[in-house]
Length: 209
Image (cartoon, rainbow, N blue to C red; front, side, top):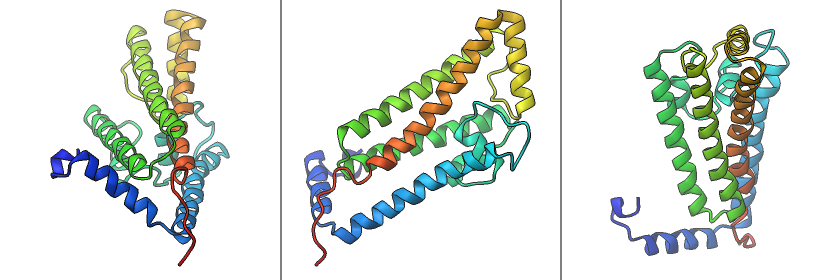
């Protein structure tokens, strides 16, 4: 990435270190305030959705995209949510996935710039990989039971999918589908929580002035 813009990697890293060294206590506090806002913006859609503000019964497990869309909150990015509507076609699903993947890459670059501690980077990348594996596993289960790979657009459709899984593959197949969605939900949330909580972990604080 650095080579693409004509900047050698060592120079990029030295500039990142210089940027961090020049950050004052006020800058760190600003980042900490941003952490609080980001956490609030991630948790609020979940709370509002499961409080039944948008639909009853609710869908569980449910992805961040699903709950954010249901309560009309901007949770990831304008482009990503622009192609995130229940029942949308396959092209829009692919555009949503492309936008989400690009959004993750942005976070990886920002983690390097902020020199986040490796434990947060490890959790971030690991959660992203597990989320992708869970999504793939869900698609394979749906393929096995004869369902399209699309995400359920309502609690009723989700229950119908579980019923088909139970009918075709038995209780174990139903459980696999439910747990695959549950793992997706947990680690998708952990992707962003690990990044938000680690934002200021690598910054050397300097006194104001």
